[in-house]
Every structure is written in C-alpha cells, then in structure tokens.
Image (tube, rainbow, N blue to C red; front, side, top):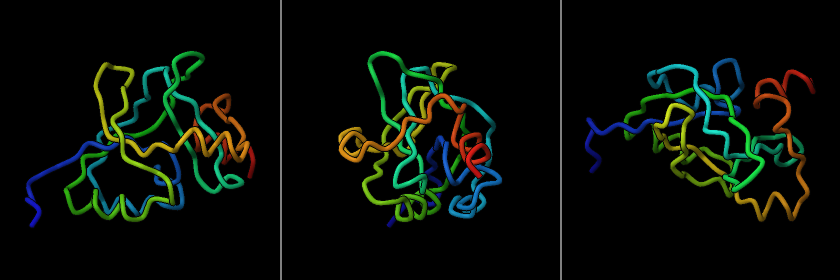
Length: 132
C-alpha cells in the first residue's frame, strides 16, 4: 500500500504542460511554477512529433523550459502509467541547482530513428506552435 502523504516533484516539459493536450494526465497536481533544466539536455520530436524526447548530454546542451508539479504518489503512478513507450523516470538537474523527476527518452532510440532535434525551438510548446 502506498503512503498517501508521499509526494514527488516532477518536471514536465512536453504534452502535459498547461495548455497542451495531455495536461489532464497530471490529475490536478499542484503547479509549483515555470522553470527550466540546467543546460545539459537535448530535445527531440519523437514519433513524428507525437511527444518529446529529452536526454542528458556532456556537451552542446540547452536549458529546456518546463513546469514543476508536486504530485501525490497516486498522481505520479497515473502519470508514469500513461507515459508513451520507452519513456523512463529519471532525476534531472534544474537551472536553480535543484532536481526533479522527469521522463527521459533513450538517446539510442532517437538516433536509431533519426528523430529531429528541436532544441532550437525553445521548448515543446514553442515547437508545437511553430509546426501547427
């Protein structure tokens, strides 16, 4: 049984952002505020732009804009269960020196499928707006 007082701080940077189609997957989690990662990640459009894929890099990274949410264990479990295939939870570094859990995507799969690097768009919402 899960402790209902347990919470998880989650960094969202894709289709579950406010105003994006999968925001309901957060199940009214507590919005903490806008933030961005430390500049050590890359952002790709996975499966023809179905969802973002981020991963950590040693060089040429960017700060990915997103939002922080505090989730109950139940909200987090729901989000995790509804993430696209191959996405996995992992701690990310934030620009302010803090950390949060985000859902990353294997770089090997991005490379294998040559999914486009969209890091220059300034985030997932900006990419979706530019390509709508």
